[in-house]
Image 1: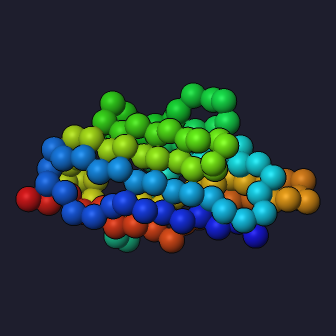
Image 2 (image 1 turned 180 degrees about the vertical axis):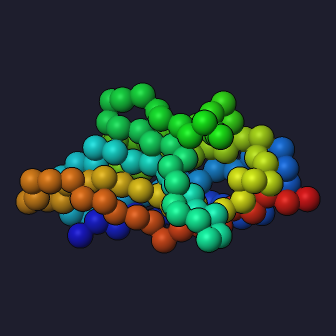
Image 3 (image 1 turned 90 degrees about the vertical axis):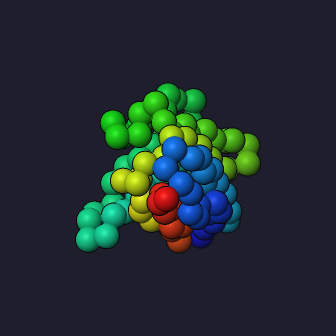
Amino acid sequence: QVHLVESGGGLVQPGGSLKLSCAAAGSIQSIPTMGWYRQFPGKQRELVASLTTGGSPNYAASVQGRFSISRDNAKNTTTLQMNSLKVEDTAVYYCYGGAVPVGARFVYPYWGQGTQVTVSS
């Protein structure tokens, strides 16, 4: 089994910064993709940023230039640095891992528990 544990989030004023971190643990063979999604009340979860092993980051247009994703492949961790935060960035943020468990042949989706990010003055 694979588990994703998030940390970070909280309350910040508009224009401020926050960093989200996520660590994957368990019987992991590989994690080809790690990323972050967010969910607004009453809406479906949407991609914020993702990063494949050895690939280039992929960002939602709404966060391009403000958010930065990174990962440590050796530690199975990913970080989302969020700068110039806006009120409309307020949402629950979820860590995502497309992982291959030990003994498996395919990639399976795994999610963190979610962390609230609130941007308000």
